[in-house]
Amino acid sequence: MAATYTGSDQFRGARIHLCDLAGLEVRDCEASGLKIVDCYGSDVYLGGDFERVVVNDVDVTAYVRAELDRQHPTRVLARDAASPEDFRAAWEAVEALWEATLDRAQRLPEATLHEQVDGEWSLVETQRHLLFASDAWLGNAVLEEEAPYHPLGFPAGGMPSEESAKLGLTLEATPTLEEVLAPRLARMATMRRVVGGLTETELDRVCGRKPAEPYPDQEYVVRRCLKVVLKEEAEHHRYAVRDLAVLEAGA
Image 1 (cartoon, one colour):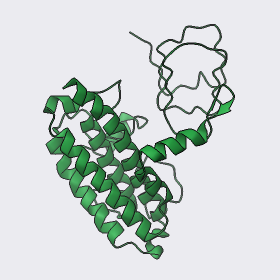
Image 2 (spheres, rainbow, N blue to C red; image 1 turned 135 degrees about the vertical axis):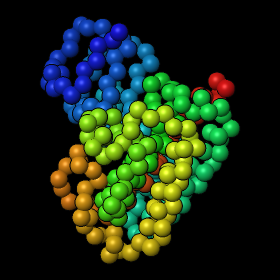
Image 3 (cartoon, one colour; image 1 turned 90 degrees about the vertical axis):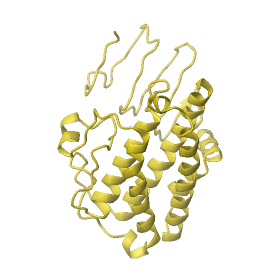
């Protein structure tokens, strides 16, 4: 079984030389300044949020961003939303995307919807994560609900299990897609209501809470919180349709 390293800084600033790194997976890590030099191999995959990426002395940052925007235009709406009208248009696009994608997904056997493609979240896990994201950034931070977190929510991999438990999350649950969609669609309706009544004043309001206890103690503005929800929806839809195509082919 491959070794696993979690929460360690032993590789910070390290130099790995003449080692066999075939199959190495680096996930949910800070990678600023990472350099891979004079290495060789095939099927090298890089995914994440990088400010600048250079491949063989060619800066490909702008190209990758432009190509992703071309393939997934809702990314642009989510990223560039500024006015209340922009937020409404972006959310309308997000809802339309998920309506079509979930219709595709529900044609597959339930078991297939729990399958992971290349170790990524299953479609059900993705819906659980988006439920948590909107619970945290909308329900808790923006709306300050008394009980914002649904037990089926699924946080990002970096949140410690004990912190998830404090929020009342049941990470070990194995709900059906239908069971997850009940609270998920309800939360999406809440987002629709919120953006429907947005004003410039509300967008610039400072929230009285942070999204969840493990998050940094800093200022959270409504504009930022709603944009996080939009970006999470757009990016995870991109991942979902990528993996859904694989599942459909297998089915």
